[in-house]
Amino acid sequence: MSVRALRGAIQLEVDERGHLLDGVRTLFQEMLAANGLDQEELVSLFFTATPDLVSEFPAVAARELGVTDVPMMCAQELDIAGALPRVVRILAYAETELSKREIKHVYLGGAAALRRDLATAGDPR
Image 1: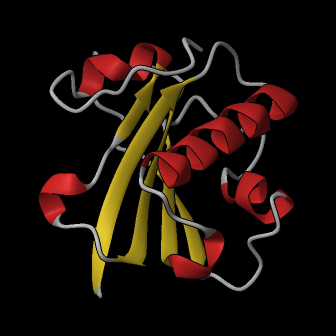
Image 2 (image 1 turned 30 degrees about the vertical axis):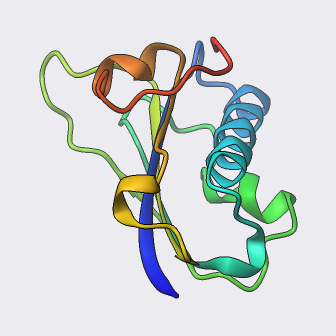
């Protein structure tokens, strides 16, 4: 078994707490499902949010899903001119039998533009 990194991102419509938590929960659950993982296989989670998202810590969404024994950290994304607004990114480390090539990264809604080569079909949020 190896530790692998999974990436995901979602662009939110607005900076409202409920909307942010719903979006992050959806992204997180789709990342796990796409890779056949459950919470027991998680090693750590790292969340970033663009500077225009201030309504809540993205990690709260994972905690609300019952992820209570996994180290998590939130940080602010760099404020780069012209960058996609209202984006939450997740970098998850998990123990898995999947090879690097088999890992599926999930980019939802407008965040698909960040990595068209990796984006999966999914919720059009």
